[in-house]
Image 1: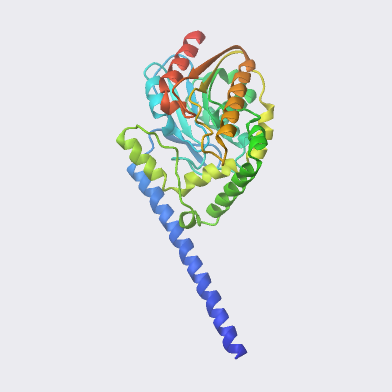
Image 2: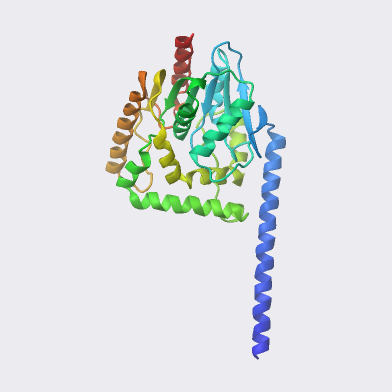
Length: 338
């Protein structure tokens, strides 16, 4: 009887192993198919540039004699989030957007995906590209911190900065004071998603959200966003950046003043950023809105030549809601630098 029972246990373990291996193989094969379909259906509009072991997608357009404008996307976003902003800027200036490692058309990069690592890859990318420094750098949300860190390392290559509802250095600390349990839960979820991808299991277990989508966008963009939403590499790349938030927060503390370089701080006007987020009550959400606004205003102190613009009808995604506010800020920067 003991031998018979042992035999059934061995069969169960072997069967389970075969099932897991089959699921893993199917998951990897499915993701290979999704990525290959995306790349064949939507060829990258720019170029792939090696930044040391992996390639990033850089998309430049326009033809201006002034400084090149560099667009840095927020957390979970990619180059196509800048589609309308880039299209309009390219009518009067040279402008570039790109995909951070793992996002869009870019390959996965070196881990951990801290903001120091992202800034280093941006530096290598721009050095290898046929661009025209010093740049006017535009950073949305988390991207605002990234362009500031880049300027901190390469002040001679940055002529001006536009922060679009940029994430403040002390944002996570402020959020933790309001909803500490939710912050911890988010960190655990991001680490879980990252590990699932490393095991090749994300497409089996995870319900993918994909990148942020626009309420109104051209049909070809809507289809592109839907396809990217099925690419676990994009979701995992987002999770890998967020899973090292505490480290990146510490690294962001080195961000300092930029002297007399032109600085524009754009803040959203519609108080919806924290609504229905992280289990906050309406009172907590409005309190976080007030803190966010104060922290945006404090960023004006980074430069002796700074201005604050309020995107009155925008939520956090100003590039979606009011792209003209960003475009006009860029135009003014370029005019001032002439």
